[in-house]
Image (tube, rainbow, N blue to C red; front, side):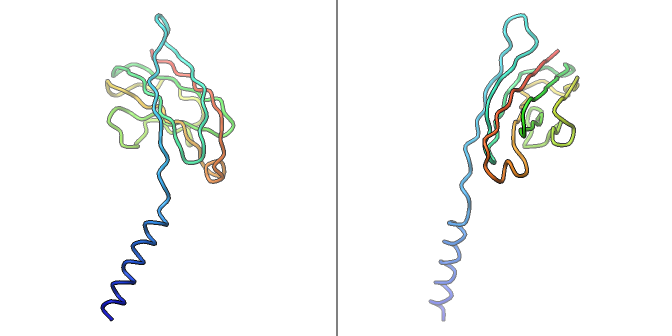
Length: 134
């Protein structure tokens, strides 16, 4: 009986390991404004449950505006030190964040991602992201 229980435990552990989906590699890219400009634009694609982060350095009190043009991609704005908490959620608030007053100095992450059927079907969706810091 003891060997049977041990065998069941080992099979259960192996099943759990095999059933766990692999994590997808995520990417981050620093956004730099051209000298004399307060804005930048990037184009990219995102697939399934991947996300892409764009890092912007900004100071407390500055205002950030972000907009996305896409058929399915969304974005969130994450403050410095965030573990996923957003100060702007595009899925709830829309594709245009305007004049978001920044609470801290540091690197802000603009996270582009998919939801719903596009995410579940592992579609690849293109987007253009525009960012302004004033």
